[in-house]
Length: 338
Image (cartoon, rainbow, N blue to C red):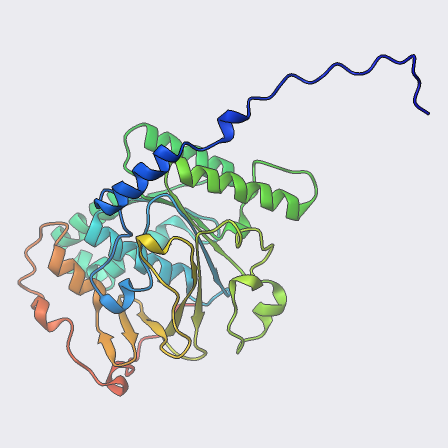
């Protein structure tokens, strides 16, 4: 019962709500900056069928879902290196389930278009230049928590490294470092919120994630981001996508599910006009319907020549993207590593 003799609690200090109201002048200036071309659109690689759907944007959160052993790490690496070749992007990479040396070897194989040990033996000058270029564009972290990965990336940026993105692969395998209440879902949501705030201030973050066990066990099912283990990245990410490897093939279906900010590029893929990255150890091909681009990374290496190397002993650039029929494009013999 309420006691009239009790002294009521003192009123809380009046809150300044003005600080929460966004000044429309700032919004209007940003819109005008966009009209003037002063706001960057996503980075492209120059392959129209790919660029229509997938671009690398500044200060956004990308969430990739893919089955274990389904190529999400290696395909993601191929996308990273293509954008580094074209746009000089720097990536900070935290691989929780793969060795750093193995991941660097993947980058080297892609960049060289050949098994790196063969190039090292036959052309050590090319190998050394490529290795130094990889070291400058891919910084590896050894961390156990997402917080440590963010803090280390922040340290690099504040000390002059022009980082485009932090890669957490897979995010499921890291401890949070932010919250440990015992409620896994609540801790995951809080961690995702912290990562989102980090992207707004510092750089883009790419998280990859496994699906839940039910989705993982069905080999024929095409998963979606809704199948992701935990589920807390879905609502926070501005770009959600899936890599689905077609069973017993080299074909990886790139499924872009949602692009929140379409003004800066990217769009959903079409179920009936699949975007395919065909993967081999040292080569990728990009295919959409009858639009077929062969040996794309080597085409980009020779076109942009980021290490300023004389490639006269290799095929000429114009020979790297021949026109092929769909049947010819899929005749490969190399073994999948995953």
